[in-house]
Length: 126
Image (cartoon, rainbow, N blue to C red; front, side, top):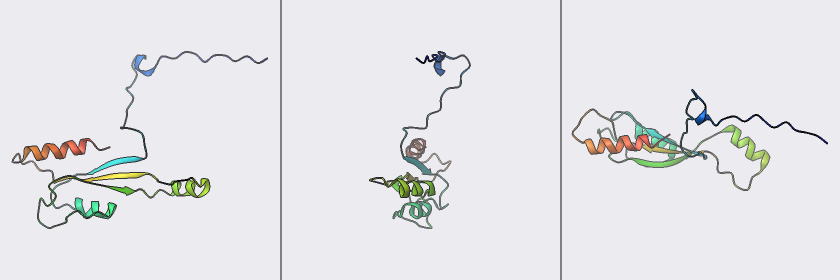
């Protein structure tokens, strides 16, 4: 008959003295959310279209993007491709990125509500 020695009891991290809080980056899953933030006419919408195949309006006029636009992009990961080739799962929906194209950021206080919506959309990203 074998005997096992019980593991020592350890207090949860929240109850340990001088413990660092655990960092959480949103809900675990296979999707990350990325915001494209920058000044006017720096190419945010162009990058958005290139990553997602989207049709966001691109113009040389500042402020063409006035509302956040969202689309998904498949992340090309060699490890994921290798695993699906060898394991042969029923579905192979790999890691995805939700790309958010935001209006330009400026120091102007002329349109404070729009700036706040833009910052809130950026804060909701990973």
